Length: 364
Image (cartoon, rainbow, N blue to C red; front, side, top):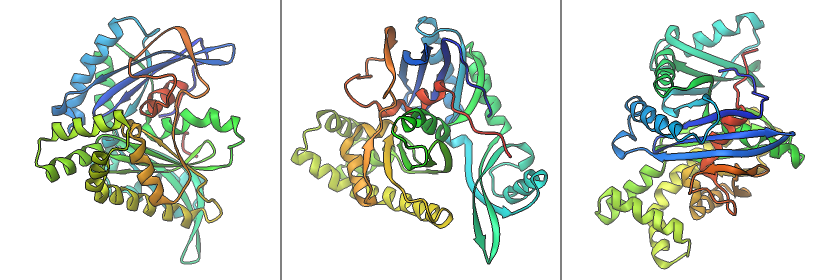
């Protein structure tokens, strides 16, 4: 999962293998200025949403079709592993010598993964220090994935005639996406909470400037919101999805929307409480690093009222993230119709971050 950034005119294509849609974006690098050259997305049929392994087959066909259109330059891609394929942990271990860290991490993970550590690809790096019963411990950010899952993603890309030059995780891509903006606003040392509101889950991501220090996948997302509406109104889940989407697009704060959010309140509280647990853990390790801002990304972040409802419970200043901020739209570029130059496009954070060259640093 360690890659070098491509410094050519066209950066690699960022490939976001989402659960309800896949997104592909390519950034151009001309005279030290970033340009959005191409961006395409395609919906994934509902029957594949809950099965990431089975989903890879249909994604290969969709990607192959997009590539045949000729909107992207070259076939080099950086892809993100689906969240279901990764186990992300913050592990406390003794202050051992650096050449023993890998062995200690493997011991800590033994029996904690849905596969053996011998079959795992593990990456980790130091993010801080903490004390446990008076003993100084090092806190390491750890990502584990099975070799078979990585191979499945690589085989999918091979079937789609792509050349994979990097494999990463969504959390890294999100931080990388906004890193250039942090440089512009003197935010190198600011602590930022990213909330990635997805279809099948929510990711909590914390960064100190450009450094990812915490991430956790929560199993509550847009699908759970739709199920809540469907159960309350006794309607098919597909209809509940259409209702939520229509109200999001209308954005008129009607009485019907008020009623809808009263139905969703229990789920929103559930999401907020899980995020607060993550913030308490961060506070226990980084006692001098207060959260300064919240940035919402992901497909469900297009619903500004949903973001506002969560932010209110966190009692933190928040905004919907714009992954395209500071990126010029190429005059000859070919972009998805859903993209709007006048509004934030939070669903594209992972794809844009991957093309910019998101990378999980090698273990140290």
